[in-house]
Image (cartoon, rainbow, N blue to C red; front, side, top):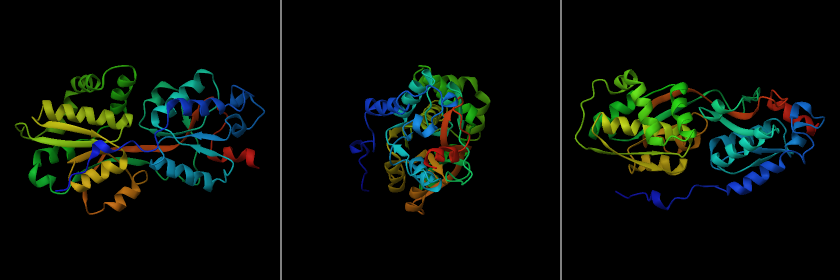
Length: 308
């Protein structure tokens, strides 16, 4: 079988944090106001008509470009970067109580750390609520039935995932944060492993994207599969494209990081029939444009004010 070389893949669209922070600093509209609610200037003028985004290949970036068209925001620019650069720029703006517009999604630790709000999306550019699905390579059920059953069983809530994400963000090592969660929720772990006979060192490879939510999921699942079910679990952290391709080609056994139906819609269409969808491991996921609560805007339509 032809192997897909994950090691050679670079994260697409990653720009230097410093560059994006410079853009974020410029987004305060030349310092005309430190707070959108208290400024005579439009929100667009205050933030330099910039929306701080993440990786250019992410589905939320495609949806944001659609929103720019749907709402007639021709004078707005979507800044490409990374999730880490976006949150760093957000942190800098909030510390100064400056306005900022970002691409956001839940679950994400930033909603626990900061007082944020989604801008309403009456045109549904971002669609309805999403789900995070587990996908598996074809044949996993036959040759790894124990792994297949556990991955089919695994589902958790935004609040549960938030415990792990917030712990990691506060400085706890990823593995320790997962271990703390597992120790605190034995009943949940028992639900996920119920009726599954432990194995003796079977190897399984899980692939995931470098998002805080997926890092949390992977670490929790890895530890349960290893400590409770006897697997040897290898993790491959890659971009969304290689993640789907790896599962489709059989180079990875499964992934817990498929955002559907919007964010990864193109990948689902591309690899339909080459992967198995095991269902949602989290429901009620949301994406859209996000601002600090102190920003005087409630809808994406408000961003068009400066263009009128």
